[in-house]
Image 1 (cartoon, rainbow, N blue to C red):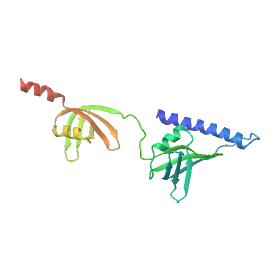
Image 2 (tube, rainbow, N blue to C red):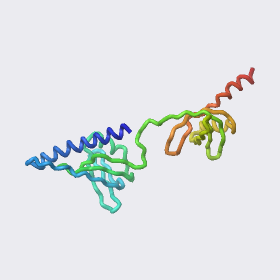
Image 3 (cartoon, helix red, strand yellow):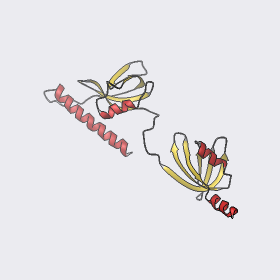
Image 4 (cartoon, rainbow, N blue to C red):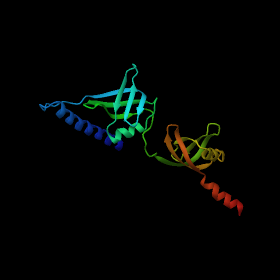
Length: 194
């Protein structure tokens, strides 16, 4: 959330500065002129990272070519590829159409995943779908998915009624297991070996 607010604040500051410079250069009488901000949606049809230029084809077939003039917008171009669906924010200056921001819907922004821990009893286990449901002490049930060979193997070692501690995070696939621990299992195994 802080990144979004910081990004929006930076965007507005950049727009204000660009608008002031543009207004002074284009309007020697010093009348206030607001830069016109445009938004377009479409598909990336051309990308020239050497010239920092992107071409976006809108749904009506019109193509708009924008120039990235800052390090930040040039970095945004490096994250894209031909065929990506994007939303672009730009303005017109003496240099042409200048890219202010590009957003790729559906691609999550890089954020540190939030790690959660729960402890409870296994109430459901589907090894075909690699899903486990754990009922916590407060009665809340949480359903998690095993997406790696390691976590899928951990599910195979469990049965309904087992007490487990799960470490998980939320992804595009839902709640995904990072680690599963069966605390009592280690104690019982050591006790059996004695």
